[in-house]
Amino acid sequence: MSAYIDSAVEKYIKTEFAARGLKLDMGKCCVRFKKIDDIPHDIIGKAISMTSVADHIQNFEDIRKQQAARKAKR
Image 1 (cartoon, helix red, strand yellow):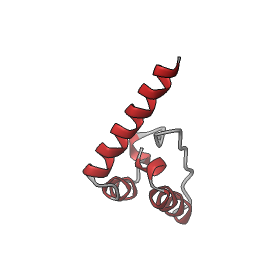
Image 2 (cartoon, rainbow, N blue to C red; image 1 turned 90 degrees about the horizontal axis):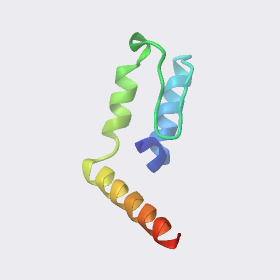
Image 3 (tube, helix red, strand yellow; image 1 turned 120 degrees about the vertical axis):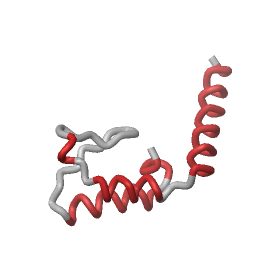
Image 4 (spheres, rainbow, N blue to C red; image 1 turned 135 degrees about the horizontal axis):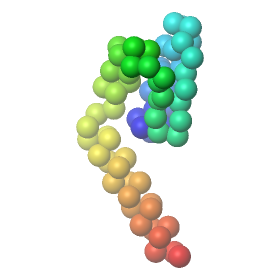
């Protein structure tokens, strides 16, 4: 999810996958792998660590507020 919050995280993931010749299958808020052995743990671990817990919580809260506001308009 942090790749969609912070363009630096998204760029890091794309750059690292390309540098290693890996195919990136990235969805709206996920990175998909066909086999567990295909997961580049170091890339994914660093990408996760690039977003602080506080930033992740703030993003979650912001999204929930946006969803509530859209629901209230209906």
